[in-house]
Image (tube, rainbow, N blue to C red; front, top):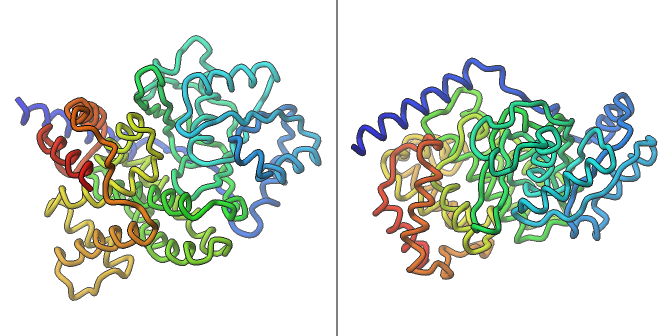
Length: 403
């Protein structure tokens, strides 16, 4: 029975791969580099929205991170309202409150300034604005919206989620303590503006965990079975850039060049995984994050080396590709040695950035329930290199509990 079920999972994955190959996949208009802000100004000048909703979180609002954007809107005589109630892992209530504000002010577009939670919240506000009769819970899963959203301009303040170039958004249902993903091509932002100056106030801990989030996206996109030439190249580029620039950025948090490279790496990783999907690292991170209130990037960083070791030889050739491309191993090394060098580098990076090796808050009594939730999320949607049994999932949870 298990063999037959896995066979149908692979048929489903093949169908998704064929869809991505033949369908003209959307892309945001990317603006990055030294002229990005001026380029965005020209775009706004040309389109002249009458009223926009600026979405951010309370911390960024208090720090004045959004002030340059508000000043620009004032200069262009574009009316706006700021919605700054977005929390980490945005809840159904937060999104619905944003929809109310959007409608009350008769907005025509959305500008999201923040990390993945803010951009995801903006996507789902847009989705609910155009589908007023469809609840968020009915949108979870694949292709449940199928309607053009208001234009979304995404300005990430973290180099991690890649939400500015993905067709997915995640929300939390507080009543069940579960996270749900919504995936639809219409969720792709219209514009992505990468401004490193928006990330320089990010503390070391968030710089570390968001970059490890991007690295997880890139690695899971590359080792999964649905890779394409475009996604593979983007994933390898992202890995190379993160391994090179993250340690340098951690040594000098205000340095613009490394921040810019990490933003671009996050964007590339987002381009990769939005076409290929992710894997077990994300299934673990989503469910542990929802249960114990763990930040997503932090959870990914902790879980990543454990899952890579569990995959074993099934991913050695692809992980070795990452090692060779990123300069983590000599070309004379064996595939097994090269793959091990990547895992060792991830573990070393985690230690240097004070990221632990496990989650002591996991309760033994929660493990059977968590294992079921993790595999229910992963199967069949994630095109993983090999399938995990419930017993293996429980063993990995115990390993994570013990660090």
